[in-house]
Length: 315
Ligand code: SF4
Image 1 (spheres, rainbow, N blue to C red):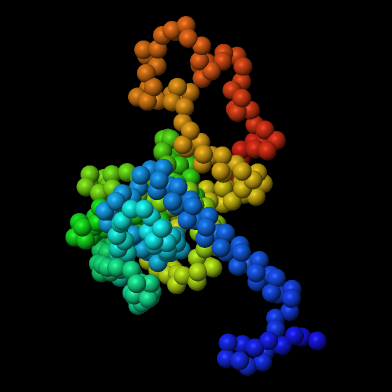
Image 2: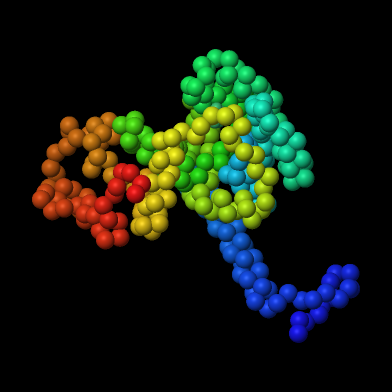
């Protein structure tokens, strides 16, 4: 027989079966752990790169995608706990793409109680006018968006521009640059903007995309689809994303290891002559474990059982 309990109004209602109560408790615990993990990782990235300082006004760029919602949400939590004072202003650029649901962000942000600004600029029409049908529109579109966001940051007096890119965005960019650009270059966690006037930060740099995805689902963020412009996602990026998902499934830990390699660079073991003064090196007679080990293989260079050989195509 089902137990009977009283609801908040005092009416008798059947109690949830013990098993479902247990699974609800488990889900709540998992969600709580997820929130704590995101706060810890975002806090850690902010600390490691000194992203936010006392008195900063942080402009959070909100696209309506899961990552920028998560960024805003976590930054608001951290601001409550931070030993420093900083302001947050959420900014959305309404690019006038057909079907953009312009009421969603203002009502979400008003309810959240955060300062915000919606910038209305019809970049969609400009892009459509200037780019021939069938050609990719993203590079002009993002150049226009960047310029507008820099101007808005100036107008709002923002001292930092925060973007919602996460760990996997950084890794995808790293692989794209390596595979197609011939460069070891990811996406910076903190850097001065290309116009030299703003500091751009990526506080989600340590957060895995799957955590950001789960967090968005748990919080029920009102996601705005990102394909309203009709442009296709960069196929090579899509391909690399699939490759990383495949690695993560087959060789757990590989993606994390690659990510940690980005902050453990050994310039003497690469070939960038600007980064390391190969031309001037001389033996000084002092033993150095980081020196060349001649014919021995570098300890980590051998493919291990855990890492296997690295296929370039998803299998
Ligand atoms: S996907 Fe659409 S909105 Fe996004 S950068 Fe490309 S053209 Fe612009």
